[in-house]
Length: 104
Image 1 (tube, one colour):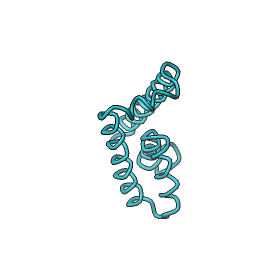
Image 2: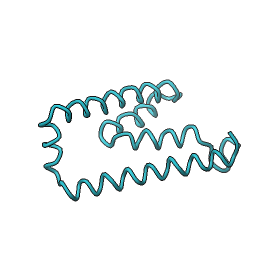
Image 3: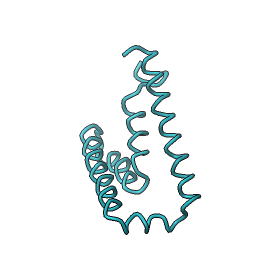
Image 4: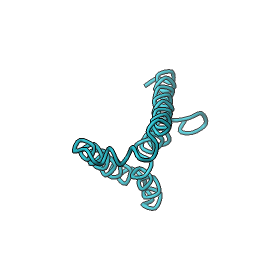
């Protein structure tokens, strides 16, 4: 990939992360804390939660396979189960997209 393509990709992923956080904040303002109880009351809510957790386990395996220090891998993986895949996006950006002065 060229330097320009990496910059565009990094910008697109960053924008997607910001939009996701905005959506989460807006949803919490509209529904409030009781909204999660409503999700768990529905069968598809449970399936969705299981899907997110499976994604966390899979992403954790990828992180552990790529990080040299297991403690660092654990520090990246555990927040995925609390904060969601926003952590996965940040890890991917930090780990694989070079920034100025690093990996160049």
